[in-house]
Length: 55
Image 1 (spheres, rainbow, N blue to C red):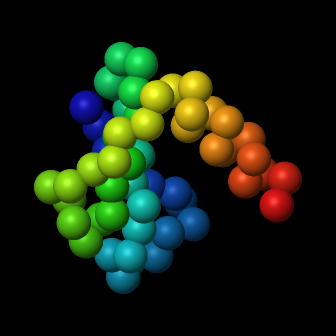
Image 2: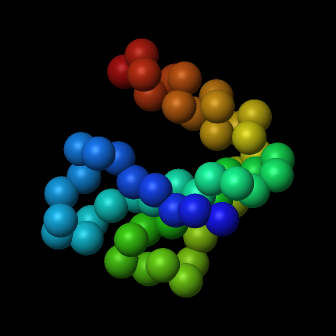
């Protein structure tokens, strides 16, 4: 599993990170709390990212 963050994120450590390489789910965590992650289905994550693109 590889964690990544937006290229727009700064170096202050206040970032949302998303993991790649996990089958059927998308783990999401706060860079300040790397041991805790929320896990979303790929369908739910795709719907979320599609929705925020229209805001």
